[in-house]
Image: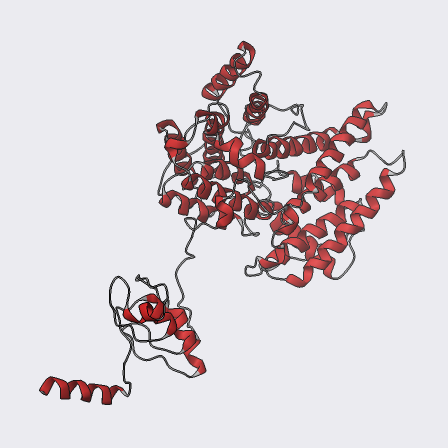
Length: 534
């Protein structure tokens, strides 16, 4: 009697007369009727000639909130509109969800947005750096806003286009003098200054950058249309700057078009009777620039080389703007050519292909890269150091970067020509070595030259901790004030890496045949058309 009275009192306190059953069938629950809970068929469904089945029905909290009812053992849901407002708790760092998958990850076709679909550069923002000085009067420079853009290029853009800003920095010591007498080059200097300031937070300067770029294209069309002015230092440098702009502006696919135009102009120079129309310094600088862009870019997509001749420099000397020697760039290009032959299927078993692959392997193992004479040979780093992250000398930066590029090239070799398994001991050893070389450089000394080794290493990491570390490095490179050129390509490179991780994690290792183990050919190449990695 006491228990019955307490139950009645509880009902009166709650204000509800509960008539539903907790263990009833799903049919009665859906009809909102009390179920007699007979099994296997309840009496109500039997009498109504309905299908009766028991099971577990999940009730999500969001659904309960939207209906305004209590969820589980929580208190009754509030009816006022403020109930559904959520307060975002600030977190220390962004949480990376590369484990999550969608329906597209299970499909056979790999779909990556084209370069035109990527978020524009306007979305990246950082505190605007202060300008240091006002440029002196220059004939090709208009007063007003142009002076600020020129000064920003002089103070910031030039500095971040290379690993070591010394006398070898052609963006300062070749392009700036030419801009004083060439309107087309000056327009591109201003365009890059405006584009970089746009990424730094001054979004209203993006139309200004496009206006200067379009003015350069108009001037180029006029000059190239006349035989006497078609081939010149001015036009060649303007085309190079257009290429830099397109890569920096979300890696537009037209950057490769400018590359081909520059290559054609260099060939015209070689065919011309007067070879003095392009000075040797400009010819060497442009050849080196496009050689690296072509070799590293096509390593991802596996296309045929557009620039086939090495510039006449000491091949074993580390170039501060590249981070490695041109001998290593040539080896990377040779690996890509061999992978193209391998894709045809007819050369893999031939003696000539095997001999060439063995030769490239020997070149990689015996490669020695030396510091340029303009950089002091004093260094405090003979091996990767996990702790040193500040106060690196120029020689330390170049040695770390060249070692990182060398390690990534070895990984690229076994990935493309040996179809290396990401979980193989040799692969993991190279990945670990590459990460150790990255740590002393991050974040202060990361530049555009580090995008290619970061990309190659990231494709083959398997541990979540290493994946998070490399995603952090991509985030560093997205900062335009640190890495001007690479910032336009990082978004796409990161998407490719995350797609490779998800597709690789979804497949069973035991179910992959020997011919399908080449992850680079299966996943990276189809997604990397017109991707710039240098």
